[in-house]
Image 1 (cartoon, rainbow, N blue to C red):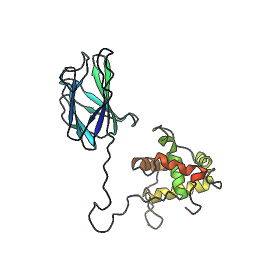
Image 2 (cartoon, rainbow, N blue to C red; image 1 turned 135 degrees about the horizontal axis):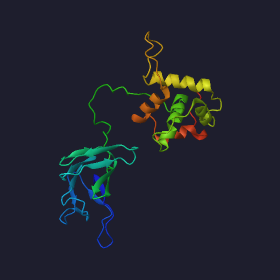
Image 3 (cartoon, helix red, strand yellow; image 1 turned 30 degrees about the horizontal axis):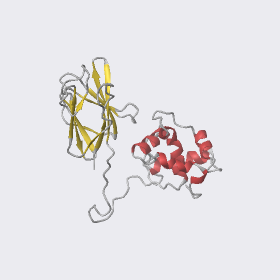
Length: 249
């Protein structure tokens, strides 16, 4: 199976253009201005031998063969997330599933898109025998606390990673279709419960109450999105047809 897909920059109308280049694990692709590269970029501001991509299973690496230009690899889905690959840097690992290599070229910025669609997972039975490992975060998607967490995460899951978090009153309004009895008190109780359940605060059975947790909602959302506790397809719990169970919490 191919490992990465390279989408070259647009070519001049008088030159042939390859819409996609697919690389299997272990295969390499050189790019630059010279015609003997695997991908020729006919621009005077691009080095003759500008760089090399190498497919490495479920990720890829980039070598910057330029002696003076820094390349930037952007994550188009990461709200400005990027890494820099300095001149002469070899085999820099790129962690993004969707990437955009930005090449500065004499006043222009040329882009090469790289997709890494291959995802490898451990199959059942591949792990060692013995007791299973306890999950890092145990959440029940049928409970009301999960619907509260989903409502808090919704604005950022909808594509705005810096969206302000909803107020408690806005969460109540969002939950009303699936949970008509939702109130400020019940929503705030579930937020407090989540802070303990996700170990942002000590539980009530401990003597140590821990430091005061400022920005509780922000901490919950940051943790949930960082570890994929709530994904976009989980937002169905906010609709009436996907309503959580009536059992507390």
